[in-house]
Image (cartoon, rainbow, N blue to C red):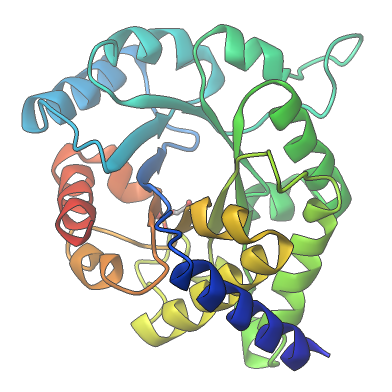
Length: 276
Ligand code: PGA
């Protein structure tokens, strides 16, 4: 069943490319600061990034995602830099009696462009399931945000040969609520065993999964598949970025710990720019 679908997708992709479609996904380096930062450290980090990278390359975007209270501060610090603002979570709700929640429209109001949805830390620690993640993706789109949808398998799932089934399950739940003819998302492959461990997936693994994800997206909608950036996340840093950046179908990185060090983050950006 899946093989048949792959053949179909490959043919439509070839067709798309040969009839003159030259649409390629923009590259992005998106920092996920997680539960870290302060007024002082945020300022220092953004000032260092801006000093090292006075002008962004139009082919490679950059975004940083602080915790909620610092969004207005960071929005101010990145003004005029070309760097975009991301958030790490949103509510599926729009408004009402939902103590502690933050709506997509509120994020949009303070200048947020991207919102990370389905990160494995929220799946693991907050018990977010595929259905909730799908509703959050829809809420983000309805608020005019670009959801950065994270998918990925655990080590046990990989070793049991379940990687493709897990990815399909995570994708299918969300794509039932997406209109791929008009919605814009960013997809991030984040093998859960590579996040925060210092051990990234091998280039072969990344190439395999990103090829699979591109095929899936194209099967949904040819242009959507071509224009949707697929980021790699999981211990990407200044040392391995050049190797990862040139892997086919890698359109950038979702960066955790290395996003907190200006030198590392800018090195990753430079590697993406060199590969663009
Ligand atoms: P890491 O985190 O770069 O520290 O592995 C990536 C992520 O969680 O998005």
